[in-house]
Length: 556
Image 1 (cartoon, rainbow, N blue to C red):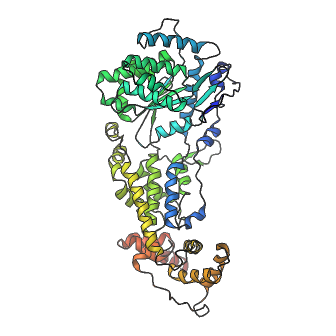
Image 2 (cartoon, rainbow, N blue to C red):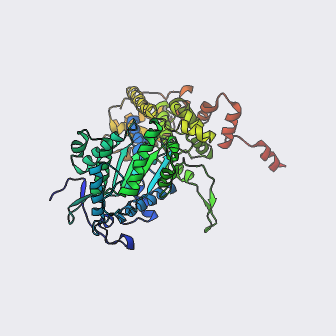
């Protein structure tokens, strides 16, 4: 029998754990990963080539925006979450073993519930449940939902067991309805199962005028019929829009799903969802069946001393920012990541992972638009003030550390920021078009690449234009690699030794000093011209200020 591409035929590997042995649903899953294996599976694959820093601005904008999707750095909290999900999924299957008939027992009881419409009833012997529930609470943008789905994506979602002629869904994610309706929740569930198993449950159950109780019993039966390993219910804070009675009713269903039906459940939401779990003791107790996790922003901890080696052990914040700093598509990308920049970065993002990455990407786009082509604390602050205004209330709430204030602003959406990303990309295209119109070799891709490469090496733009034009005209048969040393040789020649060119070098206008290399005194002045004390300190850090005091002490 041929299967759809998204459904995998079961391949079994005997488990080393006694309680998992002989359970087809568990032995068809990938082997339990080591910590190193987990990190390898979860890590984002960013395709990065340092030479891409010298592509034209529009191409670099595309590379930068790809970083938002591709970058993912596994942290200790991701490893902890993976361990919990692994335990929940496999543990939930222990009491639903199709080989021993335990699954059939659950299905028989499910039939009774469908007939009576009572989610808690059972006619046959009550089947044991080994399922657990996990509540995961964190601010919007902290990466809780994406982390859960990234971990679950390491498992095959739909598996066909030919020997038993049955399907297994190792996980399923649905969103809590906007109106907090139980009926809408059931319909969302049927639609997701239809999408992954190509069934017609929505048509069979959703189109008819069934009561909510009957739909819930259908949902519970389907969850066991297709051996769902973990059911993820996201945006649980939407329940707060319901009256207290409606919230309790849905929570009772979640408890029944775990206690009676035997399906592990992960409830994901913002801090607004916390009071929902305190409505009744049973719900609160069940939601911590395998541990409640508060998905906190990444803290800015200081380096700890490794007890084994005795050497400083970098904090996760340092490791994350060091890794991210490598992915720059700027001409002056060699600027060091100073503690000042790192501290400013944390202050403006408060360790919220989504904001950490978006601030980094937006700052690079702004650096390309303005021509500064490097990152600095000053630029990060400007970007935060102008591009990230929608999240200012949430950042201030996180800085305050007050739970009530954090909950108030915990579910802010970032649509305005995403829109700003597109606007900056458009600005880059417009600037690039106006810039290339002034270059005689604008239509020559090799000429533009040669020009950008040499510009990144610190050559002055006004001197480069005639030299690059001369190189591609006189040596059109040579590749860029061969042209670079040739142009550099011309560039280094003294004026009386070099061939006269048609265009004379132009003076660099003060308005363009911010585009010069960092070691150029004019660049420093462009960044601190209104603050003489800061300018002096900047020059001193660069070693451009003569230390008269030390010199006098040595001469005495």
